[in-house]
Length: 247
Image 1: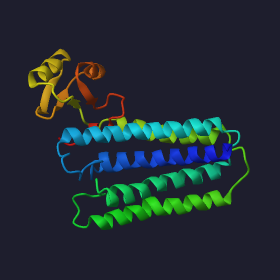
Image 2: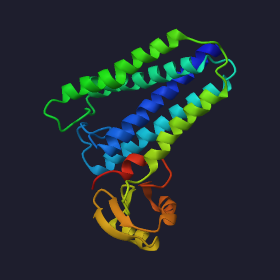
Image 3: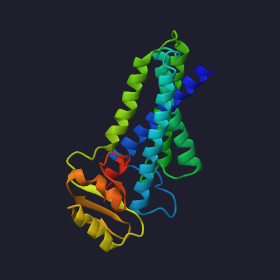
């Protein structure tokens, strides 16, 4: 039972690492797609970036589950080699699951939604980031090793997972502005009053969807959540993709 729990925890942490990798690279750096890019009826920027934020929040919960399980079983776990193998299997499982479920069965997005040949991108991504890590991870677990992986491999895996998650929270380099999504139903006058109270200078806005870009003191970002904001870029909450969205 303990070994199964340790294995499930390692796979969960690898799965979350795959999700963070996907979110950081494809949603933020390359900006090839959002989570729900191809879902009919979800077309405005506010809805797209909200769901990207929810995606990051779920990955944090999965990573936390994996880390707690690994730490509790650190003295019964397998070697560092086996841990690395299971993390790779989890990483590959994320990309395999995403390809089959999100790209092909549900069709909520593709790797490159603007490509003339989206299936080629899907297949290439599945091979290099799904099937190859799965195969290599399985080989590492077959190599095995003695029990007692100890705390250091778990600590390193945790640092890697939350290091990627923390990196996702940072705004783009050279980006002095803060992106904010306000809740639906908040009027233009109310949004303007909130920004004025926070000392924020409005730079760009789509007030019909509640999405704004402002120049403001970074210390006042968290206060916007008390006044109707749903997501605030760079506010140390799982909204990393949002801070990188192009207006």
